[in-house]
Length: 445
Image (cartoon, rainbow, N blue to C red; front, side, top):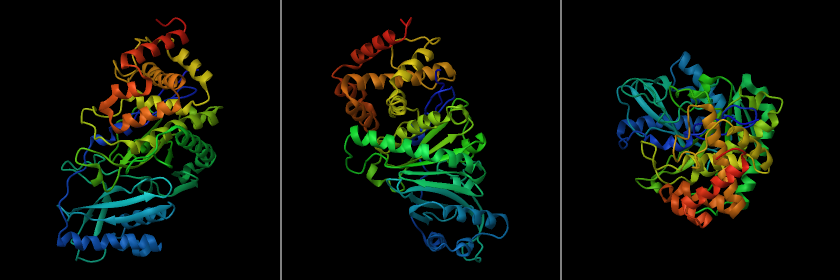
Protein backbone atom coordinates (compact mmCIF):
# COMPACT_ATOMS: atom_id res chain seq x y z
CA UNK A 1 0.00 0.00 0.00
CA UNK A 2 1.34 3.45 -0.81
CA UNK A 3 2.27 6.12 1.65
CA UNK A 4 0.64 9.38 2.34
CA UNK A 5 2.93 11.90 3.72
CA UNK A 6 3.14 14.75 5.89
CA UNK A 7 5.21 17.77 6.11
CA UNK A 8 6.82 20.30 8.27
CA UNK A 9 10.30 20.41 9.46
CA UNK A 10 11.07 16.88 8.95
CA UNK A 11 8.68 14.68 7.30
CA UNK A 12 8.13 11.12 6.61
CA UNK A 13 5.61 8.94 5.05
CA UNK A 14 5.15 5.33 5.41
CA UNK A 15 3.14 2.23 5.32
CA UNK A 16 -0.60 2.29 5.65
CA UNK A 17 -1.14 5.89 4.70
CA UNK A 18 -0.76 8.92 7.00
CA UNK A 19 1.64 11.74 6.95
CA UNK A 20 4.83 12.62 8.64
CA UNK A 21 6.46 15.99 8.97
CA UNK A 22 8.41 17.88 6.43
CA UNK A 23 8.97 21.62 6.40
CA UNK A 24 9.59 22.99 9.83
CA UNK A 25 13.19 22.16 10.09
CA UNK A 26 14.08 23.95 6.94
CA UNK A 27 11.99 27.00 7.65
CA UNK A 28 12.75 27.27 11.34
CA UNK A 29 15.56 29.66 10.50
CA UNK A 30 13.30 32.16 8.74
CA UNK A 31 12.38 33.93 11.96
CA UNK A 32 15.05 36.00 13.58
CA UNK A 33 14.82 36.45 17.36
CA UNK A 34 14.40 39.98 18.65
CA UNK A 35 17.56 42.00 19.16
CA UNK A 36 18.22 42.81 22.81
CA UNK A 37 20.35 45.50 24.39
CA UNK A 38 23.24 45.01 26.75
CA UNK A 39 23.15 44.43 30.48
CA UNK A 40 22.15 47.20 32.86
CA UNK A 41 22.05 47.63 36.62
CA UNK A 42 18.38 46.65 36.61
CA UNK A 43 18.98 43.54 34.56
CA UNK A 44 21.82 42.67 36.93
CA UNK A 45 19.29 42.47 39.76
CA UNK A 46 17.19 40.12 37.72
CA UNK A 47 20.20 38.01 36.85
CA UNK A 48 20.51 37.21 40.55
CA UNK A 49 16.96 35.86 40.44
CA UNK A 50 17.85 33.77 37.38
CA UNK A 51 21.00 32.49 39.06
CA UNK A 52 18.84 31.34 41.95
CA UNK A 53 16.85 29.10 39.60
CA UNK A 54 20.07 27.62 38.18
CA UNK A 55 21.42 26.88 41.63
CA UNK A 56 18.11 25.46 42.86
CA UNK A 57 17.81 23.02 39.95
CA UNK A 58 21.40 21.86 40.41
CA UNK A 59 20.70 21.31 44.11
CA UNK A 60 17.26 19.78 43.42
CA UNK A 61 15.85 22.32 45.87
CA UNK A 62 12.20 22.80 44.96
CA UNK A 63 11.37 25.53 47.46
CA UNK A 64 14.39 27.61 46.48
CA UNK A 65 13.36 27.31 42.83
CA UNK A 66 9.82 28.51 43.63
CA UNK A 67 10.88 31.51 45.71
CA UNK A 68 10.52 34.17 42.95
CA UNK A 69 7.05 33.05 41.83
CA UNK A 70 3.81 34.50 43.15
CA UNK A 71 1.70 32.27 45.38
CA UNK A 72 -1.23 30.61 43.70
CA UNK A 73 -1.47 29.23 40.14
CA UNK A 74 1.89 30.69 39.03
CA UNK A 75 3.87 29.06 41.84
CA UNK A 76 2.02 25.75 41.55
CA UNK A 77 2.59 25.57 37.81
CA UNK A 78 6.31 26.24 38.27
CA UNK A 79 6.38 23.51 40.90
CA UNK A 80 5.31 21.08 38.18
CA UNK A 81 7.85 22.55 35.75
CA UNK A 82 10.63 22.06 38.31
CA UNK A 83 9.65 18.42 38.87
CA UNK A 84 9.61 17.84 35.11
CA UNK A 85 13.03 19.43 34.69
CA UNK A 86 14.50 17.00 37.24
CA UNK A 87 13.63 14.12 34.91
CA UNK A 88 15.75 15.33 31.98
CA UNK A 89 19.46 14.36 31.70
CA UNK A 90 21.06 17.80 31.45
CA UNK A 91 24.54 18.61 30.27
CA UNK A 92 23.78 22.29 30.86
CA UNK A 93 20.77 24.01 32.45
CA UNK A 94 20.91 27.67 33.45
CA UNK A 95 18.77 30.80 33.34
CA UNK A 96 19.81 34.29 32.27
CA UNK A 97 18.17 37.71 31.88
CA UNK A 98 19.83 39.59 28.99
CA UNK A 99 17.64 42.72 29.23
CA UNK A 100 15.78 44.70 31.89
CA UNK A 101 11.96 44.46 32.02
CA UNK A 102 9.94 46.41 29.44
CA UNK A 103 6.41 47.38 30.51
CA UNK A 104 6.52 44.74 33.22
CA UNK A 105 7.65 41.91 30.93
CA UNK A 106 11.06 40.35 31.51
CA UNK A 107 12.69 38.10 28.93
CA UNK A 108 14.33 35.12 30.59
CA UNK A 109 16.49 32.66 28.67
CA UNK A 110 16.61 29.04 29.72
CA UNK A 111 19.92 27.91 28.20
CA UNK A 112 20.09 24.15 28.15
CA UNK A 113 21.79 21.19 26.54
CA UNK A 114 20.36 17.68 26.77
CA UNK A 115 23.08 15.13 27.47
CA UNK A 116 23.73 12.80 24.55
CA UNK A 117 21.41 14.78 22.25
CA UNK A 118 22.44 18.39 21.69
CA UNK A 119 25.75 19.38 20.11
CA UNK A 120 25.55 22.83 21.71
CA UNK A 121 23.33 24.57 24.28
CA UNK A 122 20.09 26.04 22.92
CA UNK A 123 17.85 28.76 24.34
CA UNK A 124 14.17 28.69 25.31
CA UNK A 125 12.79 32.19 25.91
CA UNK A 126 10.25 32.94 28.62
CA UNK A 127 8.28 36.11 29.13
CA UNK A 128 7.83 36.79 32.85
CA UNK A 129 5.34 39.37 34.05
CA UNK A 130 7.14 40.88 37.02
CA UNK A 131 6.96 43.36 39.86
CA UNK A 132 10.00 45.56 40.62
CA UNK A 133 12.99 43.41 41.54
CA UNK A 134 13.26 44.92 45.03
CA UNK A 135 9.56 44.59 45.92
CA UNK A 136 9.90 41.27 47.73
CA UNK A 137 10.61 37.63 47.00
CA UNK A 138 7.51 36.64 45.00
CA UNK A 139 8.13 39.00 42.11
CA UNK A 140 7.11 36.86 39.10
CA UNK A 141 3.35 37.02 38.63
CA UNK A 142 2.98 35.13 35.34
CA UNK A 143 5.09 32.88 33.12
CA UNK A 144 4.54 32.47 29.36
CA UNK A 145 6.40 32.91 26.11
CA UNK A 146 7.68 36.34 25.10
CA UNK A 147 4.71 38.42 23.94
CA UNK A 148 4.76 40.97 21.14
CA UNK A 149 2.87 44.28 21.02
CA UNK A 150 -0.31 42.39 20.07
CA UNK A 151 -0.01 40.14 23.10
CA UNK A 152 0.82 37.16 20.86
CA UNK A 153 3.66 34.66 21.24
CA UNK A 154 4.93 34.01 17.73
CA UNK A 155 7.23 31.19 18.79
CA UNK A 156 10.56 32.99 18.38
CA UNK A 157 11.88 31.45 21.58
CA UNK A 158 10.98 27.75 21.30
CA UNK A 159 8.34 28.03 24.03
CA UNK A 160 6.55 25.96 25.27
CA UNK A 161 8.70 22.88 25.75
CA UNK A 162 7.21 19.61 27.10
CA UNK A 163 8.21 20.52 30.67
CA UNK A 164 6.03 23.64 30.34
CA UNK A 165 2.97 21.99 28.79
CA UNK A 166 2.73 18.75 30.74
CA UNK A 167 1.81 18.54 34.41
CA UNK A 168 3.65 15.24 34.83
CA UNK A 169 6.31 14.32 32.29
CA UNK A 170 7.21 10.70 31.55
CA UNK A 171 10.80 10.34 30.31
CA UNK A 172 12.67 7.33 28.93
CA UNK A 173 16.41 7.49 28.26
CA UNK A 174 18.26 5.12 25.96
CA UNK A 175 21.59 5.29 24.14
CA UNK A 176 21.40 8.30 21.79
CA UNK A 177 17.73 8.91 22.68
CA UNK A 178 15.69 10.91 25.18
CA UNK A 179 11.97 10.24 24.60
CA UNK A 180 9.03 11.63 26.52
CA UNK A 181 5.29 12.12 26.74
CA UNK A 182 2.66 13.27 29.17
CA UNK A 183 2.22 10.71 31.97
CA UNK A 184 -1.24 9.93 30.62
CA UNK A 185 0.44 8.68 27.43
CA UNK A 186 3.20 6.75 29.19
CA UNK A 187 1.90 3.38 27.95
CA UNK A 188 2.49 4.49 24.34
CA UNK A 189 5.94 5.80 25.25
CA UNK A 190 6.90 2.57 27.01
CA UNK A 191 5.70 0.50 24.05
CA UNK A 192 7.58 2.52 21.42
CA UNK A 193 10.80 3.64 23.08
CA UNK A 194 12.95 0.60 22.31
CA UNK A 195 11.85 0.60 18.66
CA UNK A 196 12.76 4.29 18.44
CA UNK A 197 16.10 3.51 20.10
CA UNK A 198 16.84 0.91 17.40
CA UNK A 199 15.88 3.41 14.72
CA UNK A 200 18.33 5.86 16.28
CA UNK A 201 21.08 3.25 16.30
CA UNK A 202 20.35 2.33 12.66
CA UNK A 203 20.51 5.92 11.42
CA UNK A 204 23.64 6.79 13.35
CA UNK A 205 25.42 3.65 12.14
CA UNK A 206 24.51 4.44 8.53
CA UNK A 207 25.77 8.01 8.82
CA UNK A 208 28.94 6.96 10.62
CA UNK A 209 29.67 4.50 7.82
CA UNK A 210 28.92 6.75 4.84
CA UNK A 211 28.69 10.35 6.02
CA UNK A 212 31.50 12.88 5.58
CA UNK A 213 33.78 13.74 8.48
CA UNK A 214 32.76 16.72 10.66
CA UNK A 215 34.38 20.07 10.02
CA UNK A 216 35.07 23.01 12.37
CA UNK A 217 32.09 23.60 14.69
CA UNK A 218 29.64 21.63 12.57
CA UNK A 219 29.06 17.97 13.07
CA UNK A 220 26.06 15.73 12.58
CA UNK A 221 23.82 15.01 15.54
CA UNK A 222 24.71 12.05 17.74
CA UNK A 223 21.41 11.73 19.61
CA UNK A 224 17.71 12.50 19.43
CA UNK A 225 14.99 14.18 21.50
CA UNK A 226 11.49 12.80 20.76
CA UNK A 227 8.08 13.83 22.09
CA UNK A 228 5.09 11.54 21.53
CA UNK A 229 1.73 13.35 21.55
CA UNK A 230 -1.83 12.31 20.65
CA UNK A 231 -3.58 15.65 21.16
CA UNK A 232 -3.29 17.64 17.94
CA UNK A 233 -3.69 21.00 19.66
CA UNK A 234 -0.79 20.18 21.98
CA UNK A 235 1.23 18.79 19.06
CA UNK A 236 0.82 22.06 17.15
CA UNK A 237 1.75 24.16 20.17
CA UNK A 238 5.00 22.46 21.21
CA UNK A 239 7.88 24.91 20.62
CA UNK A 240 5.53 27.15 18.60
CA UNK A 241 4.21 29.67 21.12
CA UNK A 242 0.48 30.13 20.54
CA UNK A 243 0.59 27.30 18.01
CA UNK A 244 1.00 26.76 14.29
CA UNK A 245 -1.65 26.15 11.66
CA UNK A 246 -2.72 22.54 11.58
CA UNK A 247 -1.52 20.52 8.60
CA UNK A 248 -3.68 17.40 8.51
CA UNK A 249 -1.13 15.65 6.27
CA UNK A 250 1.64 16.00 8.81
CA UNK A 251 2.35 13.10 11.16
CA UNK A 252 5.72 14.17 12.54
CA UNK A 253 8.17 17.02 12.50
CA UNK A 254 11.80 17.71 13.28
CA UNK A 255 12.53 21.24 14.49
CA UNK A 256 16.14 22.45 14.42
CA UNK A 257 17.05 24.73 17.32
CA UNK A 258 19.55 27.57 16.96
CA UNK A 259 22.49 27.47 19.35
CA UNK A 260 22.27 29.87 22.27
CA UNK A 261 25.63 31.32 21.27
CA UNK A 262 25.62 31.74 17.49
CA UNK A 263 28.49 34.24 17.27
CA UNK A 264 30.62 31.75 15.35
CA UNK A 265 27.93 31.50 12.67
CA UNK A 266 28.59 35.00 11.34
CA UNK A 267 26.01 37.70 10.55
CA UNK A 268 24.36 35.80 7.68
CA UNK A 269 24.89 32.31 9.04
CA UNK A 270 23.12 29.96 11.38
CA UNK A 271 24.41 27.53 13.99
CA UNK A 272 22.13 24.68 15.03
CA UNK A 273 22.60 23.28 18.53
CA UNK A 274 20.18 20.37 18.27
CA UNK A 275 16.71 19.29 17.17
CA UNK A 276 13.33 18.48 18.69
CA UNK A 277 11.15 15.78 17.13
CA UNK A 278 7.40 15.61 17.77
CA UNK A 279 5.27 12.69 16.53
CA UNK A 280 1.47 12.38 16.36
CA UNK A 281 0.65 8.96 17.82
CA UNK A 282 -2.90 8.86 16.47
CA UNK A 283 -1.70 8.03 12.94
CA UNK A 284 -1.81 4.55 11.43
CA UNK A 285 1.94 4.05 11.75
CA UNK A 286 1.35 3.94 15.52
CA UNK A 287 -2.07 2.25 15.55
CA UNK A 288 -2.11 -0.39 12.79
CA UNK A 289 -1.32 -4.06 13.16
CA UNK A 290 2.08 -3.26 11.57
CA UNK A 291 2.89 -0.54 14.07
CA UNK A 292 6.41 -1.85 14.70
CA UNK A 293 7.30 -1.13 11.07
CA UNK A 294 5.48 2.19 11.18
CA UNK A 295 7.28 3.42 14.30
CA UNK A 296 10.61 2.26 12.87
CA UNK A 297 10.07 4.15 9.63
CA UNK A 298 8.90 7.41 11.20
CA UNK A 299 11.73 7.16 13.69
CA UNK A 300 14.35 6.65 10.98
CA UNK A 301 12.85 9.43 8.85
CA UNK A 302 12.65 12.13 11.51
CA UNK A 303 16.00 11.18 13.00
CA UNK A 304 17.59 11.45 9.55
CA UNK A 305 16.41 15.06 9.45
CA UNK A 306 17.85 15.60 12.92
CA UNK A 307 21.22 14.07 12.00
CA UNK A 308 21.90 16.60 9.24
CA UNK A 309 20.15 19.63 10.77
CA UNK A 310 23.34 20.81 12.59
CA UNK A 311 25.09 21.02 9.22
CA UNK A 312 22.91 23.96 8.16
CA UNK A 313 25.18 26.97 7.89
CA UNK A 314 23.33 29.53 5.75
CA UNK A 315 20.40 31.55 7.07
CA UNK A 316 17.44 31.12 4.74
CA UNK A 317 15.46 34.02 3.36
CA UNK A 318 12.01 34.97 4.57
CA UNK A 319 10.51 33.77 1.28
CA UNK A 320 11.91 30.28 1.84
CA UNK A 321 14.80 30.53 -0.60
CA UNK A 322 18.32 29.82 0.57
CA UNK A 323 17.33 26.62 2.38
CA UNK A 324 18.27 23.09 1.32
CA UNK A 325 16.05 21.87 -1.51
CA UNK A 326 12.88 20.20 -0.23
CA UNK A 327 13.42 17.09 -2.31
CA UNK A 328 16.94 16.74 -0.91
CA UNK A 329 15.77 17.03 2.69
CA UNK A 330 12.77 14.73 2.36
CA UNK A 331 14.47 12.40 -0.10
CA UNK A 332 17.33 11.81 2.31
CA UNK A 333 14.89 11.12 5.16
CA UNK A 334 12.96 8.64 3.01
CA UNK A 335 16.20 7.02 1.83
CA UNK A 336 17.24 6.50 5.44
CA UNK A 337 13.78 5.31 6.50
CA UNK A 338 13.60 2.56 3.86
CA UNK A 339 17.21 1.36 3.90
CA UNK A 340 17.25 -2.34 3.08
CA UNK A 341 13.61 -2.24 1.89
CA UNK A 342 14.11 -1.65 -1.83
CA UNK A 343 11.25 -3.96 -2.84
CA UNK A 344 8.84 -2.11 -0.55
CA UNK A 345 10.08 1.22 -1.90
CA UNK A 346 9.41 0.08 -5.49
CA UNK A 347 5.91 -1.13 -4.59
CA UNK A 348 5.13 2.15 -2.87
CA UNK A 349 6.33 4.19 -5.83
CA UNK A 350 4.12 2.21 -8.20
CA UNK A 351 1.14 2.70 -5.90
CA UNK A 352 1.78 6.39 -5.23
CA UNK A 353 2.27 7.27 -8.90
CA UNK A 354 -0.70 5.22 -10.15
CA UNK A 355 -3.06 8.21 -10.30
CA UNK A 356 -0.55 11.07 -10.14
CA UNK A 357 1.05 12.59 -13.26
CA UNK A 358 4.84 12.41 -13.55
CA UNK A 359 6.53 15.24 -15.46
CA UNK A 360 10.05 13.84 -15.38
CA UNK A 361 11.28 16.52 -12.94
CA UNK A 362 12.66 16.08 -9.48
CA UNK A 363 9.80 16.83 -7.07
CA UNK A 364 9.64 20.48 -6.12
CA UNK A 365 11.52 21.66 -9.21
CA UNK A 366 8.12 22.58 -10.66
CA UNK A 367 5.00 22.38 -8.48
CA UNK A 368 5.23 22.99 -4.74
CA UNK A 369 6.75 20.03 -2.90
CA UNK A 370 4.44 20.22 0.12
CA UNK A 371 1.22 20.10 -1.87
CA UNK A 372 -2.09 20.40 -0.02
CA UNK A 373 -3.27 17.43 -2.11
CA UNK A 374 -2.43 14.27 -0.19
CA UNK A 375 -1.82 12.08 -3.26
CA UNK A 376 0.49 14.66 -4.83
CA UNK A 377 2.45 15.23 -1.65
CA UNK A 378 2.78 11.51 -1.05
CA UNK A 379 4.08 11.06 -4.59
CA UNK A 380 6.61 13.85 -4.04
CA UNK A 381 7.98 12.17 -0.92
CA UNK A 382 8.19 8.83 -2.68
CA UNK A 383 9.87 10.31 -5.76
CA UNK A 384 12.36 12.22 -3.62
CA UNK A 385 13.33 9.05 -1.78
CA UNK A 386 13.65 7.19 -5.06
CA UNK A 387 15.96 9.88 -6.46
CA UNK A 388 18.28 9.38 -3.50
CA UNK A 389 18.18 5.59 -3.86
CA UNK A 390 18.89 5.95 -7.59
CA UNK A 391 21.90 8.15 -6.81
CA UNK A 392 23.12 5.62 -4.24
CA UNK A 393 22.69 2.69 -6.65
CA UNK A 394 24.80 4.43 -9.30
CA UNK A 395 27.40 6.26 -7.23
CA UNK A 396 27.31 4.82 -3.69
CA UNK A 397 25.93 5.75 -0.28
CA UNK A 398 28.90 7.98 0.53
CA UNK A 399 28.11 10.17 -2.49
CA UNK A 400 24.51 10.58 -1.28
CA UNK A 401 25.59 11.57 2.22
CA UNK A 402 28.25 13.98 0.93
CA UNK A 403 25.71 15.55 -1.46
CA UNK A 404 23.15 16.05 1.33
CA UNK A 405 25.76 17.45 3.74
CA UNK A 406 27.01 19.89 1.10
CA UNK A 407 23.46 21.00 0.26
CA UNK A 408 22.74 21.73 3.95
CA UNK A 409 25.97 23.66 4.32
CA UNK A 410 25.88 25.61 1.02
CA UNK A 411 22.38 25.34 -0.50
CA UNK A 412 23.12 27.82 -3.32
CA UNK A 413 25.73 25.46 -4.80
CA UNK A 414 23.05 22.91 -5.73
CA UNK A 415 23.94 22.26 -9.39
CA UNK A 416 27.66 21.93 -8.64
CA UNK A 417 26.84 19.52 -5.81
CA UNK A 418 24.83 17.35 -8.21
CA UNK A 419 27.84 17.31 -10.54
CA UNK A 420 30.23 16.45 -7.70
CA UNK A 421 28.03 13.53 -6.63
CA UNK A 422 27.22 12.10 -10.05
CA UNK A 423 29.65 13.49 -12.60
CA UNK A 424 26.61 14.72 -14.51
CA UNK A 425 24.85 18.03 -14.94
CA UNK A 426 21.52 18.54 -13.15
CA UNK A 427 19.71 18.07 -16.48
CA UNK A 428 21.57 14.83 -17.22
CA UNK A 429 21.00 13.39 -13.76
CA UNK A 430 17.32 14.32 -13.80
CA UNK A 431 16.84 12.74 -17.23
CA UNK A 432 18.56 9.51 -16.23
CA UNK A 433 16.52 9.30 -13.04
CA UNK A 434 13.25 10.05 -14.89
CA UNK A 435 13.99 7.21 -17.31
CA UNK A 436 14.52 4.92 -14.32
CA UNK A 437 11.16 5.95 -12.80
CA UNK A 438 9.33 5.33 -16.07
CA UNK A 439 10.91 1.88 -16.43
CA UNK A 440 10.06 1.02 -12.81
CA UNK A 441 6.43 2.18 -12.94
CA UNK A 442 4.44 0.58 -15.75
CA UNK A 443 2.45 3.01 -17.85
CA UNK A 444 4.35 6.16 -16.79
CA UNK A 445 5.48 8.31 -19.70
